[in-house]
Image (cartoon, rainbow over all chains, first blue to last red; front, top):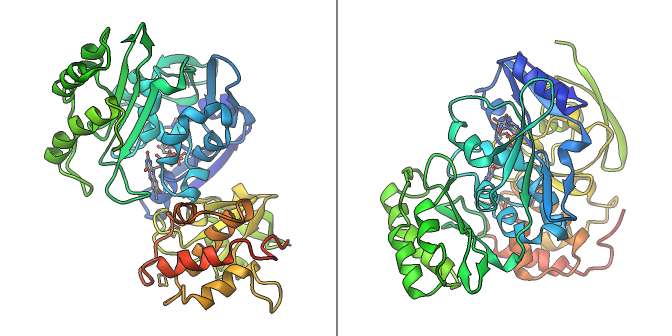
Length: 273
Length: 160
Ligand SMILES: Cc1cc2nc3c(=O)[nH]c(=O)nc-3n(C[C@H](O)[C@H](O)[C@H](O)COP(=O)(O)OP(=O)(O)OC[C@H]3O[C@@H](n4cnc5c(N)ncnc54)[C@H](O)[C@@H]3O)c2cc1C
Ligand code: FES
Ligand code: FES
């Protein structure tokens, strides 16, 4: 029998999650409730978090903190987070976006995870609370690397620096069905320029590996370069480093590998998709 | 396991039900409260046929726990007409033959209502975006888009 427990504080939820192997955190429920409806999840306890801190956005300053329970709809309603509207709008239709949480997106299997791709390109940290006590900030990349092996505990919030120039942040989701198909792949890039040259490039992909990943090869080739045709060609050469895309109902592995460099090139050149 | 009491405002009327802890809002609406407008299509969030408004925003009732609706405002397509007078969206769906089997219609109407409540004069692209989570296997969508555009800007849209 499946039980539900409502937790008034994040500490309570984190404690229960750590102490009970059959406890499952419920974010927006867009993936968890599917499992309930389909009879894959019939035992254990669903943990609901009613703590307002879980759904708080602090985006007034240079350092941004988003509660893990914040929905894509809340992101879209925030003017201060306008640079994140494209990845938030990339997720499902309006009803899904009113439910789907940022925290849940970190755990969504490929080809899901489009918002997480944007967070990776922003060098985000996740605040993880395992057991009672306070949360610990961990690089998002680390959480993703161990995600499918071990339960990390409760992610309470996501933190990152606001891009100094929102125009340096780019996001694209490539899908076949418009406006709402699943990702063939997604790409996010934060490419700040110093004296006309890229400095501290961050590029991330979705659906090109079991979890969203950083495109280290591309970042290396772009570093210190002007975004000209030669730099873009070099980035395309390095585009597939570290990729392990799946074959699924949306696309084959071969196809994803074929089209990624093309879309990366268009994104870097500022061309329409 | 003991049932849990839950109360919310459904289409303007306070309603109460005893539910199982993991029960979905869709099941409570259909089985306990006799509101058959939201349908069970996929149970996966993919078809949109169970769309309801919770505090004015579209949600998928097949993926929502009933107990999470305590004290909130839930609206379904059943509450759109004002007595015998149809909501402009309902009238235009009939006018434009925007329903064939009708299975998707309550979800479409609800999604469209959420759009027009916030944006009474949407563009065609905004209409398409608003119903992008709702699948229709019969109409090819064009009559639905036309009906929503025709209802846009009608007097009476913001009826309580
Ligand atoms: C029709 C449809 C279309 C979709 N389209 C897209 C899409 O285009 N792109 C995309 O990326 N996703 C898509 N999704 C998937 C999903 O809605 C999103 O990825 C969403 O962000 C998941 O969040 P959630 O809060 O609903 O997750 P839930 O279902 O609540 O949780 C998912 C998993 O994450 C765990 N979890 C949730 N929050 C936390 C936390 N704070 N700490 C620790 N663990 C946590 C849960 O225990 C569970 O294992 C779609 C889903 C549907 C139904
Ligand atoms: S039944 Fe809820 S989305 Fe299909
Ligand atoms: S009218 Fe039949 S599914 Fe839309």
